[in-house]
Image (tube, rainbow, N blue to C red; front, side, top):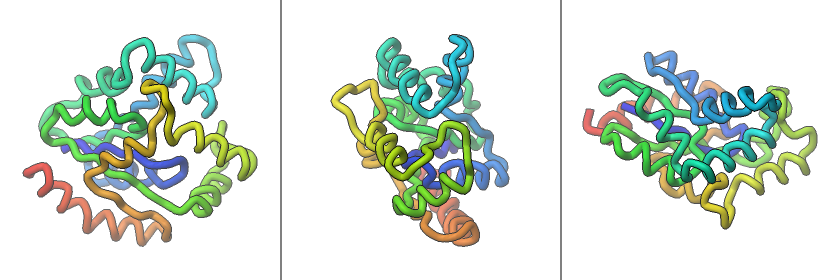
Length: 186
């Protein structure tokens, strides 16, 4: 089974991915292709650069290019989690596999900003205003090559709400995983 993750910044996608990895899932991120592109071009992997480079790669190779590069590296019959799905075309590419399911990780804006400030990751917003500006750039765009988080989330098969603590999220995932397996026919 392939569990694809989408969601807004600091919603808990990485935490969900880590939980799935602890259950034997392999891991990959569509952002890894962008990071490699930035590194090869000698640019910093800041959040703004990741967004701009992701858009550039999608403009060059089509909106599903990141998934196109990733899908062949996922073995058939092996549980995998694919993080950082941010464009509907990426979902369409990943849905070529019948064992794919898209999970949106959702959380309240205030909770996400609190998590972002606590994690102190390089490239994260330094103020609430910057956080909101970055998010606005990711939600929707007239450019099909840009991030389209709203349209991508609308394609989710399942939503996990992550406004509580880690135990609450893990409990929800324990209940959700068997349902995901049934959804893909496992």
